[in-house]
Structures are given as C-alpha cells and as structure tokens.
Amino acid sequence: MAGGTQRVYRARIRSTQSLKKIFRAMELIAASRIGRARDKVTAAGPYARAITQAVSALATHSDQPHPLTTERTDTNRVAVLVVTADRGMAGAYSATAIREAENLVDQLQAEGNEVDLYVMGRRGVSYYRFREREIKRSWVGSSDAPSAETAQEVADTLLAAYDAPAEEGGVKALHVVYTQFRNMVSQTPRVVRMLPIEIVEQEAGEGEELLPLYEFEPNPEQVLDALLPRYVSARIYSFLLQSAASELAARQRAMHTATENAEELIRTYTRLANQARQAEITQEISEIVSGADALASA
Amino acid sequence: MALEVDLVAPDRTVWRGEARMVTAPAADGQMGILRGHSPVLAVLREGQVLIRPVSGEPFEARVTGGFLSVDSDVVTIVADAVEVGGSPAQA
Image (cartoon, rainbow over the protein chains, first blue to last red):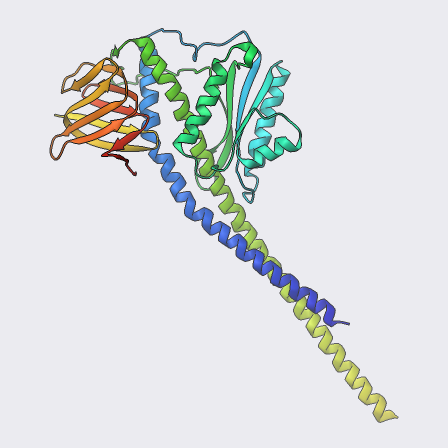
C-alpha cells in the first residue's frame, strides 16, 4: 500500500526534528559556555605572566642547577599527558588530540623510551581502555571547566612522577598534548615538552630595560624551589583552560553543522513525503477514472 | 609616583592599582615595601598581605603561599590561593 512509504517518511521527519532540537540545544549550551571559558583563559593570564617573568629573571641571574631544569639520564621512561574531552559531540576535537598523542608516543617509543600515559577526559580514557593500554592516572569530569585545583592536582602528580627514583617509575621527561585555542574557528593540537623546564630568557630589545638584579629572599635555591613547581602548574592550568575553550568551540561548530544537516534531511524527507502523497492521489484518481470507464463501457 | 601593585591568584587578578605601601609574609618574616625598594624575589609563606592604596581603604587578604617580586616600583604578589575577608573572593 502506498500509504506505507508516506508513513515511513513522516516518522523520519519527526525523529530528525527531535534530533535537530537536541543539536540546537547543545550548540546553544556550548556557545553560552565558551564566553566563560575564554574569560577564564584571560583571567589566568596575569598569574602565568608574573611567574614566567620571575622564572626568566631568576634564570638570567643565577646559574643554580635545579632538578626540574636538568635532564635525567637514569631512566628512559617518559610521561605523556593527553588532554581530551569528557563528552563527544565535539567533532574531531578528541580524535585529533589523541592522534597527535599517538604520533608522539610512536616517536618516543622509536627512540627507545617507555611511555607512561596520563589522560584527562573520558574520551581519551575510553580510547586507551578499549585498546587495553595502561593508563597511569586519569582525571575525568571537568574537561569543559577545569579548576585551578584540578590543574594543581595534575601538576602535583606529574611532578611527583618526575621526582620519583628510577626504580619506582620515575620519568625523565613530561610531554603535554593539548589543543591550543587560537580563535573561535581555529584550534590546533600542540605537543609541548614541559619537563625538564627549558627556560627561555627574555631578550632585552632596544629601549627596553634590562632585567634588574634581584635579591633573593631567603636565598636563590629556595626561591627556585618555590617558583618552578608553580610555573609548571600555571602552564598546565593554562593548557587545560585552552583545551576547554577549544572543546567548546569545536562542539559549537560540530553542533551547528549537525543542526544544518538535520534541516537538510527534513527538507529532503518532506519533499519525498509530498511526492509519495501525490503519487498516491494520482493513483487513486486513475483507479477511480478507470473504474468509472469500466462501468460506463459495461 | 607610587607603587604599582598586582595581587594575582592562579585564576584571577585579585587586586590591582597604585599603593603607598605593601606588607607581605616573606619566608623570613613580614616584609614591608615602600617606594624605591631594591629589586627582590621573595618566597611567601602563609599569612596576611596588606596593601595601603594611594586613596581609599587598606586592602587586606590572606594568602596561603606564593612569591613576591619587586622591580622598579612594580610589585607583583603571586599567591597560590587568596582569601579576602574570611571567604574566598569571587572574580
């Protein structure tokens, strides 16, 4: 019966409509959160800048070797922190970060290193779980709004791993894979070697004042001890915040596209449903006409 | 010319402005900073930070640790966590 196809099309239209509503809602949620995420990136700026400045001032004026700045040679274990999303529906966001991480892991393993994985976000966790790869530690539940406390916890864990002796699984380096937030349309995955810290001294440009000679209170070693771990956690916090903003931007874009695709589908199905209805009517008319003809000629 | 002061926490700037005097809990004891202080990088322990602005009420906050840098009358206090008047301040 021709009414069957019509009914199928109607059902498809209805289900696509409800999907469209979901996509639209998710797009709006992501859009409303992204402003806050970007504000947090900006708000964390002064702290990170102050620390970076202090670290480079310290590096210019003291040649103190510090465990966090010197290369370890007693182990070939390295840590990789992968920042992914907790939820999907963000296009290729998590997949891109994971792919980048996999490249890095392959490269590190080719160089003869053992890799310890630290994962942020449920998507990354399930990716590695499914492939039965060991995850040293994971953090889930706050990928779209990371707090300073979470960043501190991540930094503490990784610094502890870096500090640990070789027999207890100490690592000689820490790489972070995160997604840099450039702007609303462009987010790029990046790999950063976080530890040992490479201190980039600020170049004093022309007309700029040279970094002053500092006094250290109580002494350079203790200042370094206090500064470097904070530098690491500030960097990690900024990576998490940027990843969160990227995740939301990717989600907003993916959901926008999904909404448009749903609209397109609804249009197509509406057309098909109309066609089916018209075909049915035409058939009925021709049936009636031919029935009447048969009666008249009888 | 007064001191330019920034008090920053990991997730926000807590106080920013011009001040006549700043005292902070340095590792070796409370440290007072006035104009023309020599450049210093100091570790802070837990304690009270007091900022006396050029005009207006003194600003007091509790920090749990961090560090402080002074450089040509620019004072930057980097705190791990800041409490303003009993409860954690909102950005």
